Length: 346
Ligand code: 5GP
Ligand code: MN
Image 1 (cartoon, rainbow, N blue to C red):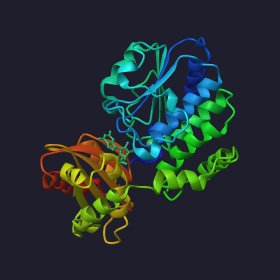
Image 2 (tube, rainbow, N blue to C red):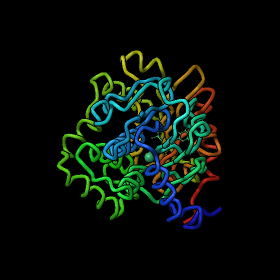
Image 3 (cartoon, rainbow, N blue to C red):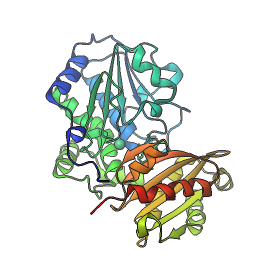
């Protein structure tokens, strides 16, 4: 099978989509309730895009504005310094029937938990995203699979709405952009990404401080937990048609022993995927008795989003995930069985 090439499905939003999105925002009275939502377990792109866009709407005069995400009202420590956090409410306090709901960085409705009903209770549902696997579940969809981050889409919509970037909006969008480009290291780092970064930095934000706070700070307990979990990594050179698989797992007991919260494990994949002998890397993180949040990365031989979609998840060609069931070994066996089918032809 050939991977999806540039075609209709890969094209970004058309002018009609942008015009509809601009009208949906601009035509709202200032006191109309607007609900911003993003995917479960929000990362820097989900939260940064949502809060940056929310601050932009506030500059436009929106007075009834709330942001939320499904699940426990708890943020990863590194994201607790973002501007615009006063917009955030627990999901129970989200507007029940907003005039407009705007959804950030979610590839499908399954990523919205109980908030999925807002797509129908809201007057208009606007979706901003960049996942190739996005199912276009909004009334208006601004989905650009070529965009490095959802924040690229959010910034373009803010620009079309006439919002001038300030340092607070810029910090949110910068965290989002650096999260999804691996601080400008990934393939998605196009000239347009650097041009956006330049516009954001021109507001006076401090990239060194932001990066250290968001990416390079973790508790000592997490450092030791990483050491233990990395020690049990396994290399399977024969997997993925001989391109190799490296993987490890972390249990709830590991977290408890080191007194750590689950979000600290999100950075773990970066320490695993550097393995030279494997194209595909995988971290299996326990979230329940027989339930695992799976992160997968590929260096180019395998389309891991195809594996993830087959196993009930989603993502991008070279970064994807899903929820696995059974034991960690069973989850890995299921992945290994799908890897050969997801090889990208040279
Ligand atoms: P991460 O490994 O960083 O959690 O996620 C990598 C990519 O896969 C992200 O784009 C994320 O949105 C997607 N992803 C991770 N887990 C899931 C999942 O359970 N379902 C879906 N649909 N996408 C996921
Ligand atoms: Mn994203």
